[in-house]
Image (cartoon, rainbow, N blue to C red; front, side, top):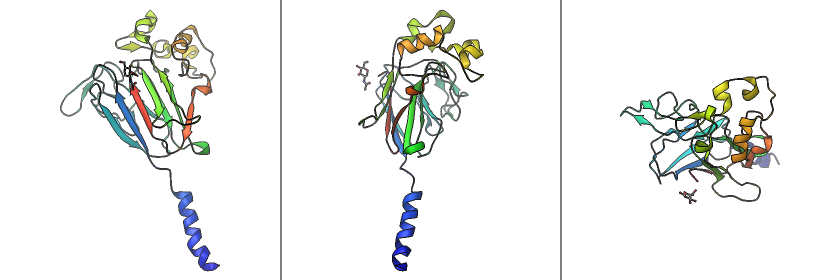
Length: 225
Ligand SMILES: *[C@@H]1O[C@H](CO)[C@@H](O)[C@H](O)[C@H]1NC(C)=O
């Protein structure tokens, strides 16, 4: 008996403590133009020609992860420069979030009930269309997409070089930014919601916009799906 516990107990602890494997994120540039995709807190950022893919690992348990596209960039040989949209402090490899407008793929890995949570958010505006999906979809573990002609249809007050700003970025008021913790849809948030019903259009948007997959799932983010 004692001998069996001696063997089994450490095994049980090992199982409890073994985290899920890291998730592999595959980023696809399906746009006709070059992109400089970025990802934090893991990934950084690179130059990605049309048709190319970029792969990196994200550890299980990572919260507030995001992936976005940068457009109109130029960088020097040491990776310093600037992008028209999504710029992260002028660095090729990002350690900080991007400047609006930028469409966001957001995720938290291995949260409650061993689920990954993920969404597409327009809270920082829109620059490039995104499809955010599990590498292998099954059951309720399905992806989502936001790709529409935001730039051409963008309300005049929200137009920005290379994209369409969220009203919070432009007006910085409680009505659009929900600083006080509660707010309701506006004509501007409805503009975003109509074009991409599954994406977050303002900070307190419907929780059903968040999708889930079992922890350990690998993901694919396709720009210009
Ligand atoms: C890539 O873009 C083309 C249109 O330019 C589209 O037909 C195709 O479905 C896209 N592929 C993926 C994987 O999203």
